Image (cartoon, rainbow, N blue to C red; front, side, top):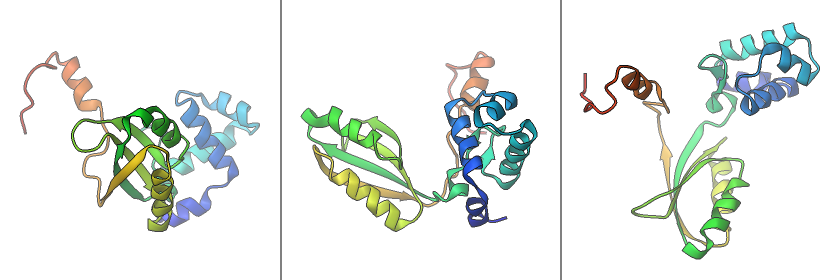
Length: 171
């Protein structure tokens, strides 16, 4: 099954399941089925199907945005008028494609990760960012491939081994 098949196979019930998982990653199948008004077996089979297709991974609680059609990832550095920083951050929060926002040091003031379905969709998001009061300019870099996705396991493993302060050595 390819990515467009994954996207096309998601119906409103699947999307509601994904929203419930985002809102409460620890939700139990029974609670999920009750909250959506669907049978427990229906909820379980839909979760399994989304795991098999790659929409859900990491134990069935993390959504692969690429698998649901958001396969363009961009990193946007934004220079802002500092008096408008809070307003810029508030406005960025309203743009659904903005996944995360960080105030940064160095070149630029704010960094955000943005996803899009294609370059036209990205352009729309970037224009929305540029229209925000207080945004002076932006610089956008496209991600071509993710070699190491966001992870926490190595850090927690080091803590568990009592070596959190030990230097990292390549293996």
